[in-house]
View 1 (cartoon, rainbow, N blue to C red):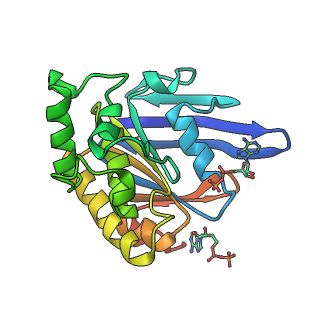
View 2 (view 1 turned 45 degrees about the vertical axis):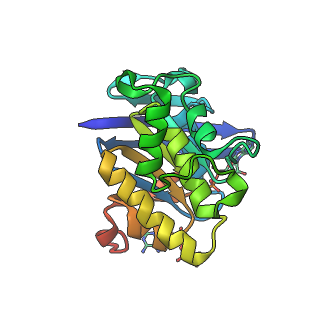
Length: 226
Ligand code: ADP
Ligand code: ADP
């Protein structure tokens, strides 16, 4: 089944066509990555999917339902940005619980139980009382992922979540992100400028150029041009 569909989606800013007539479909449970150089339209595409931007034209569908004009809080998405910083004055557990401010935990589970469950999922068991500045960059990003996952969204959106980390932490985090994704089976859309990273984590990769995917394929076949 298809979780997410873009049909003829364009986003124009004055002179710039950031996203140019993009049509694509992301399957349920898929890890789908947009990769390409700076300025090719990756972040704008993700923001359109999240609902932070509205297309100039075209349609976005979640599970077949038109959500084109629907605000982010009414889309079933969890979002992690590169610099979507944690609240520094809150503990790790409070940061994760913040993800439940506007939505209930799935299955009506109490918030504290849900927080413990998520900390275990992101491999931060027992770290709930720490402050964010006591954690490594990779640990902080896992807290941000736990916060995004708290209400049990249908789709997880990750925009360059590793770009602030050094090479070793990046590699560890990308393995952890993939494990979390597999464990939940959650449809995940990932944005990176790093080809190696894209090829390592994804089920399918959309190679973006000038506002549209020039190739969409599994990592093993992505560089084989006809
Ligand atoms: P350049 O030297 O022109 O910048 P790169 O190899 O850096 O070339 O590629 C530019 C963009 O094109 C990158 O985003 C990359 O992902 C994409 N790309 C490179 N080679 C291929 C290929 N064989 N098939 C599809 N996309 C490619
Ligand atoms: P990427 O994430 O691949 O680096 P972006 O989606 O951020 O690319 O940007 C695509 C193009 O749209 C770029 O030329 C960028 O300058 C432009 N753009 C993005 N957001 C805005 C905006 N809010 N106003 C004007 N231009 C924008």
